[in-house]
Image (tube, rainbow, N blue to C red):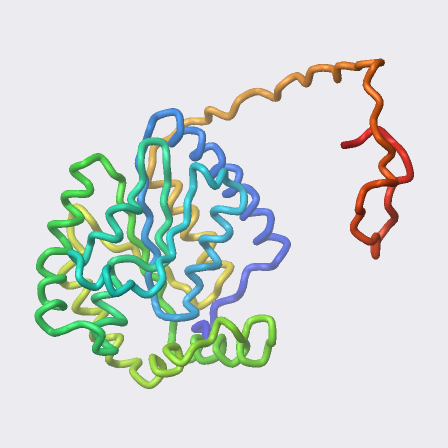
Amino acid sequence: MNNGQEKIETEVYEKELAKLQAELVKLQYWIKEKGLKVCVIFEGRDAAGKGGVIKRITEVLNPRIARVVALPKPTERETKQWYFQRYVKELPVDGEMVLFDRSWYNRAGVEKVMGFCTEDEYREFLRSCPEFEEMIIRSGIILIKYWFSISDKEQKRRFIARNENPMKRWKLSPMDLEARTRWVDYSRAKDAMFEHTDTEKSPWFVVNADIKKHARLNCISHLLDQIDYKDLTPEPIEFPKVTKDLEYKRPPISGQNWVPALYGENPVDDERS
């Protein structure tokens, strides 16, 4: 399932993750200060762990600087647009990092395998995608592409675990189950995608995703290595004193509609708003 790899201990994983997240915060300040435009793409099979690593990246960052894009099924209008059009408007502006949880590569994967696009549309994508990405890069955007590689057995194990957990069952869809029956078709589509889009200017970086904790640490560490940044973390601020107004009379808090305190208890009277 994981090729005999020994899993990292949870205590060690959490310690290493905290170190990497501290570096992500430094990177965030650098992106903002230098006006960088960073676009990171996460692709891979269902249950490969893309969402998990995105969550670990963004949970310590300012959502105004680090933004996640996970577009739904295209609308009728969007299906009539230039294919890349709805993705272009999501690209980063100065001082922003955008993380794509799936991207324009849908056409080379699910749309190709499930027959959601024509053969001509698919072939045109393979021809135009490298040119599109070269345009993006020439515009000043830093483009980083990750493919999360997962084994057949590990994907099956994760699907079963989701099915057995009511709080995770929503992650399973009929599309996921259909994809299981087309494992080889997806493999062929991925190989063709790499053949056309794994270029010198816009390479694919493959993450071994069979062990989630390893994948998260390896991916974040690699991401940090892609940008030469310095620590611009500001010094701790000095808090001003609260201004007192002796003439201000606060209404009693007992007259407010408090949420029932099922845990702990609500205040009786103190200085709060």
